[in-house]
Image 1 (cartoon, rainbow, N blue to C red):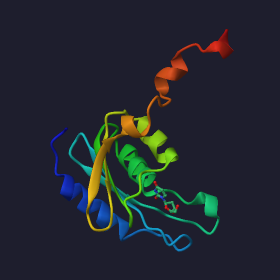
Image 2 (image 1 turned 30 degrees about the vertical axis):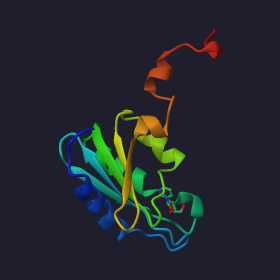
Image 3 (image 1 turned 90 degrees about the vertical axis):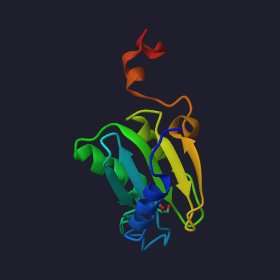
Length: 138
Ligand code: THU
């Protein structure tokens, strides 16, 4: 597995979790996304009184990174109270930028497990699929 400071990335995700805006669910999530440049982009969940407009911590981190010009990633750390895995929407959003991203799933005590996006989202849809001609095009 790739070399980087796993505990440091989790600590940044935990700090971001402290900035979560989650008055409706009360469930706070923090993320830290390590770009290939070495920069880290943090995210927290940001909820809204119009409930469906809330956004997950992981996707906040991705949009921050891409909007700053970074599109290639080494790892994502996500921290929740209980060590929950990223939701399906976040997995697909990350998949856009490659399947080999290391995912660190941590709980509030800092305990974590390590996996990859390819393991969390096997056989995911990607840009390459748009270029192939499926049955509907025949
Ligand atoms: N949430 C995330 O930020 N990331 C996930 O992967 C799952 C859920 C947020 C969305 C909402 O603000 C709260 O957690 C409860 O679902």
